[in-house]
Image (spheres, rainbow, N blue to C red):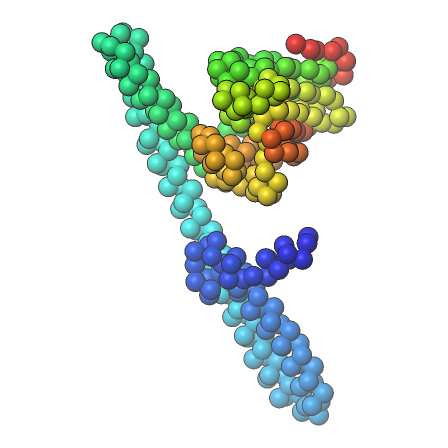
Length: 337
């Protein structure tokens, strides 16, 4: 930890602003006060012990008084944490309820709009354009609701987790089929390379969710056509997916040559609702929840995640997953497409 980071942590007022509470409800401030009181108490007790060594009753009373003050501070700190935990619980429940309530109407609205478009209800090109705009915006809202619902389930510990044996290659193939249209529309070439690995004993839907979010991110932050045209030497957008055996784990890497992540944003990239400065500048769509969800799900599955990135050159995200209890004998047949 650098001196600047340490100083930022000590800046209690700045830390307390994150909670939007008063100082006497802020855990950092209360711990700071508690630390000062402990130092004062130890110093005072030592001084009293030397001064009133012949009168132990006075020393005992003063120590009991200081102990009472410290216990009162500890009670206040505990209550503050309880209030923060309750506020967080209510927030999570609210997000869950709202997401559930919005999901069904949005789904019905999208079905209705898809039906109208398929039936040729639009009479001219302008109306067709309006239908497409409506469809795209409903899709964005539906995606946001799904992300909020996933976050709520992860934080409440209610995200469905069903372990079974499966092939990682099959899950990757399924995810690539889902994103085939999006990758073609963004002119992104996706390549899978690696060796066949033992079967995993984990939740395949959870792994699909993780891979889907990472691939979706890589496609979103690929170079757009005008950006590519402005730099003739820039190579075509690409995503390389590699996976290989690491003993008790499998490691999966997703490398892209997209816009990358600015260095100053990298330490915040897994925070909830965080969006990098170049995402805002390029007006890239997204909720800022994808990588938070990926990290949370990986922790639930017993895995880890990391990345390296350079702005204007691309990013490589990697994650590991344990094979689980039913690991099969290794297969080293190469897989390349």
